[in-house]
Length: 417
Image 1 (cartoon, rainbow, N blue to C red):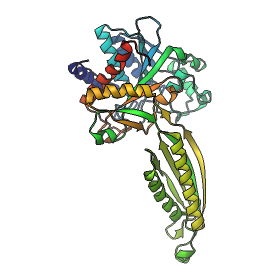
Image 2: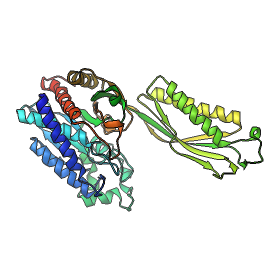
Image 3: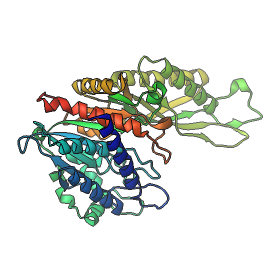
């Protein structure tokens, strides 16, 4: 793809992102939830663009919109390209959608040239990555890989509508979910382009970066239990102040995480001090801990160190500490061979390549259980995402489409994954 062709393709992608952003439940902000009327409209429009790109189009049994550009041999295994079309509430217009539309432009380039590959190219707009309506994430990609959680059919949205009922209203059959599953031999690999959702590429003054892994995460509810007392009568040296113990630990969380040898992150996001009176020493503090990293072993080691530090602080202060894990997801490594291909393509279009982990979750997490995955990040302004101010540069999108075409060119020569 020439630079001029890439610029024209990027302009189409930007215009289509704007068009999809207008398909929203709310008139003044972008909200498009799973199995909504807006989901149906977005699928229909993307399906039209798929057909214009020479693809056969279908909607699967969990609501993913799918298109296939046949290879040299009908029925050949496919390279799967894409991302998601659902959004969070009050979203930006590039998270997910950019990945679907750049994939479409890549296929359209082959269609215009009349080229076919030994493998088919398939583009997918996943139906529900965010989980904003029912609180269950990755339902689209879990359907594709046969990991759909059957118990989720009974889950309800804020209006009391269950997933099963919403599927029926959408025209889908809850009993047919398994039909969305693709056989392992039907797909060779999955490629996903996504905005970075962080500031690293912008800090490096680079448009594109290659993802090494999607961070694993551990989330815990933690409690510091001391003794409440009168703020005026209990001497400082005799207090068992739960909030002071918690504050010391929060600082230790930052210090220990920064000292770690891996790109680990830790966050204390919620805190509640009880009884919460201006003239009472806090007797109990409840808080949350979120720890993430691209490799499970360093992540587990950090969490062990953080919890041990909490116990040490509490023992010294006469306070008790307890924790309970409520969320656990392992890190997802991107395929080493696909990383090398992305790095070569990115280096060719922007001079050098930067490797970085993803701190956010993606459909690639579910897909990786079945097939090799590779991800490309595109710079976003200020690292802002899940927000209306989300922004990308058209020039960066042009480079991304060129890299996409270069990435796929290896398979045009018959190379293996």
